[in-house]
Amino acid sequence: MTRLLALALLLGLAGGKASAETCRSETFKDKTYTLCEVDLNTDQLGLFLYAPDGSPFGYFNTLDKALKAQGKSLGFAMNAGMYHDDRAPVGYYLENGTELQRVINTDGPGNFGLLPNGVLCLRPARADVIETERFLREKPDCTSATQSGPMLVIDGKLHPRFIQNGTSRYIRNGVGTSEDGKRAYFAISDQVVNFHDFATFFRDHLKLPNALYFDGNISRMRAPELGRNDLGFSPLGPIIGVVNDQ
Image 1: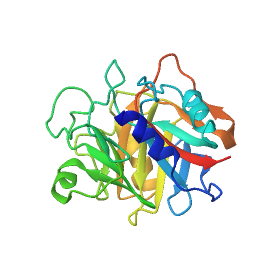
Image 2: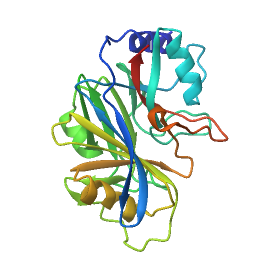
Image 3: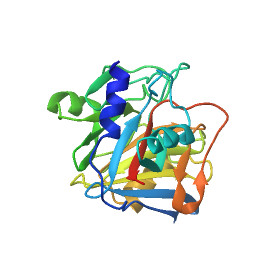
């Protein structure tokens, strides 16, 4: 019932404005990235995990079909945080006021436990990447949120554990937000990159004060204006995307 209510609330959000999202290719230090810029003044950005029957949406097309049944459609979309084998989120997950996973602020194995990690907090006409300990101190009134990690950029500085010539290289995706919270920048690398390369793209090329890593290797993006709709071989956990009126 909670999942059904959460979906109904999201699908019932007011719309009526044309999407202002823009997706494009960007090159930085001989690496190319696909970048989608979301204007929170005009775009309706939402988080999605479970379909009304309780199963994970898993794929962009499945989510788009559910939205179309409500007279809406999915624009840009991306996987939005790490998840377990059953697609349940590893870290904090809040969807339209319903908390499905608490905040995790302890270190541990894997990229999520490479502290500091962070939270993408969605509020009306605003999106902010916030480092987890700061998030717990400030307790922002998010309507939806997803936790992932590690942080890529923290108040203008790179994560302290990143090594310039690091050998861990994957297709990676993540998000950065402007200081005023009015723009969110979602990027996926077109080639394998290490954490340092990916983080400097957000800090030095996009000039963003805070950015958060979503995942690597399984990273996927939907960008209709570029004719892109990554399918992959297995279902995703949390998905973030722009909801448009048909």
